[in-house]
Length: 375
Image (cartoon, rainbow, N blue to C red; front, side, top):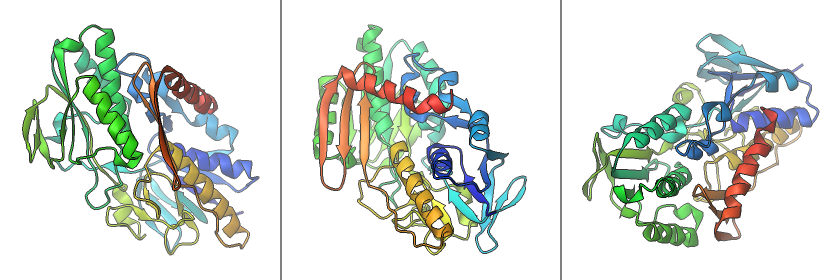
């Protein structure tokens, strides 16, 4: 039998497992990841309000692997030999017949003073640390921002920052502390969140204005200090900074022997194959895919890419051509803690549904639905 190795234990990796077994694949599957846990990052936005704990968001994959007859190998990938079809890890070498890379990307931490900021999508621990700091503050300035990869501008994750910004504004109002804080949103782009569509940008900026949130836009980032944000447009005070840097590929990508994009991601075809390698596929944030420049790096798209990768892997197994593609699609509920803004975009249309309490509960319902496999 031919072995399938999947690198990662996130959205794309676990969706790939599900789709393989759903399609009747009986081949042995090995899942490789540094920890045997799945992290549900979208709900980190509710940690500051105490609506989610670590137990709510981090799940062991042991039951999942047992149910899908998957062997889990706890290891960190260090490189590949694509010609010999081998994965190098910190605990040894693993051979494969087919490979799916779904390890995700990583944040670029090159700005000076980056140690003074909190990056929520790195996991529960930094989000909780930020929440604890916020709870102790009696007042001051809270700064929120995100950056991009200058060599691959689409490699960013800005949506969660909008959610933290609006959610913490709502939280402070609920706590009757909002008048003690100044909230500032900063971004090097003059129109932040443009990938969401022109209407979404205008709506989000208008929402900030209505909430009394200051904006510092269009100035290149220079760094941070313990109590300020540094930009080419000047320095401004910040007692607590939440910042999402731009993204690049995994650290081991340069030791993979695979083609990389200028931004450091694995170069993928529209069929989610790594360029030039018929038996190696990529899904999720570690890949650079052809498509519109607004195509997001988000869990929903990672799932779509994983489905396409699996269909093409099975086609190649049968001796057929890889022809399946994924739909470039952005679906996002920008949660504000007590309501939400629905944003949708595909190659033909883009629209926004204004703030409704219903959308907050729809986001929570989706969380419950998605996590059924792990509870």
